[in-house]
Length: 252
Image (cartoon, rainbow, N blue to C red; front, side, top):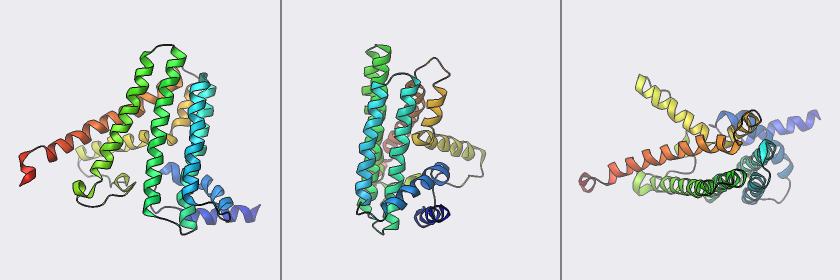
């Protein structure tokens, strides 16, 4: 057992990122290292692990829709976590096997966005089934549109023609140093909170637990902060694009 744990630690050290969020550093990647240790001697490729994570995520959506109540949401959240462990494992496996690729990083981003679309759509449909109110079906459609539009905006502002340089997946999410000015600190804090809520694997379990103690369906507790951040992001990004490209000075 000591040798097994030592091997896991070594895999984690050899495959960790130089910069990562706290949830990944202390929870997800150490657990994913177990999967990487088991998979490293198999012919399974990092891209195949990425696809497997997406396949597993489908079961989370099914649980959300077909299993009402807080228990069903908790089961869905646990499946989301397992899918996310696979999402972490693909990159770690790529680094261990020296099979990293730029297209693999883009595939990972693509799969993440598919998961987000599936999650918000399933959460909205769940509320439609539970509440028996067609309004929630429109919420589901709107949620899918919001996530899709935000993804399109992200892809656009990452274009080298717009950004002035190539921006890879995850590069724009790197941590910024805490500014010295009071206004800068407030903006930094708001952005940090927004990044936390966008990264739903970090908090969906806590929301699932809270769902046992409130009269609302847990899906509402998830959708409000998650979509709220996406809406704010869409507004800010759209405004920045408008100010940059919509003025006559752009052509000078």
